Amino acid sequence: MTNEASLLIIDSRKRRREALRRRLEQHFDGATESARIHEVSSVQLGLEMLESADVDCILLSRHVGDFSLDALDDLAHRKTRVPVPVILVTDEEDNDLAAEAVAAGAHDVIDASRLGVTEPHRAVRNALDTVRMRRTLEKQRQELERGTAEPARYDAVTELPNRLLFRSHLSRALSRTTDATNTGVMLIGLDGFKAINSSFGHGVGDELLRMVAGRLRHCVRNVDTVARWGGDEFAALLEEMSRPEDAVFVAQRIMYALSSPFVYKGQDLYVTASVASQSIPPTARRGRHCSNTRTRPCMGSSTVVVMAIASIRRR
Image (cartoon, rainbow, N blue to C red; front, side):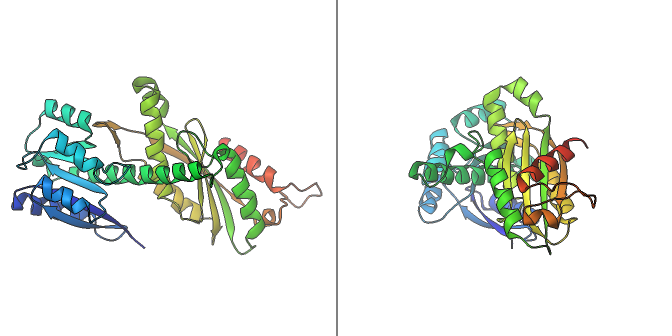
C-alpha cells in the first residue's frame, strides 16, 4: 500500500505550476508514495481550497499577485491546530527574504532555478515528514488530555513509547506469537546528534529528535513499536517476522530514511544512523529463553530484552 500526499501549488503563472508539478510527479511515482497535486493561481484561491480539502504541504510562489508574509502565515494556520508546512518558491536567491519568510513561519525556501534537480522533492519530503510527525504528536497529546493514554509510559520530547512501555510491548509480543514467526529487537543510534545539540542548543536538538521519530514510524509496520530508548538512541520491536532476515530490510530502510537532511527553520541538519538488531528465538515466546542446550535455568521475557540490548551494544 502506498501513502498519498496532498500537495498544493500556488502560482499565478501556469507554466511554472506545470513545471513544478512535472518535477514532483517524477519523484512521487507511486511505488512507495503517490501525490495528489492541486494547483491554484492566488493565495485567496488557496485559502478557499483549504476549507474543502486536506493538504499536507503548500508550495507558494513569491511572485503570486497577493503574496505577503501574513498570507504565508494564514495559509499555514488556516484550518488546523497543526500548521501546514509552506515552502516558499522564489525566482532568485534572496537571503534576506528567506530569513524573513522562515521567521514568518515558512518551512523552507527554494530557488525556482533549481527545479531541474531534486530540490523541490527534498523540501517536500522533509515537510511531509514534519507534518505527519506533528499530527501524530497532536493526536497523542489529545489522548493524554482525555486520559486515554498513560503519560508515564511516553517520552516527554518525542511522545514515543518510552523504555518502560517498550518492555511491556515486548512481553506482550512474546506471549501471543507462535513458533512459526520471529521477533526482532533493534537499537538505533544517531551519529552526529550530540554535535548538533551542542552547536544549536537543546531546542533544536529536541525538534530534530521529533523529526527522527516521525521518519522512524514510517519505516515499520503498524504492528511494530518504535520507542525512545534514551538520549540519542531509539529502539524498535519487530513482531511476527516470517524470517529473522526481515530485520535487515527494516534496518536498511531506517538508514536510508535518516540519510536525507532534516530541515529546521531553513537549516539543513545531518545525522546518520547506526542500527543493530537481535532476533529473539521462538522459545522465548513462551516466556522462557535458553541460550543453549546445557542444563541451566531459563529466563523470563523481561530478561530477554535486557540480553538483546546488551548483545546489540557489544557489536
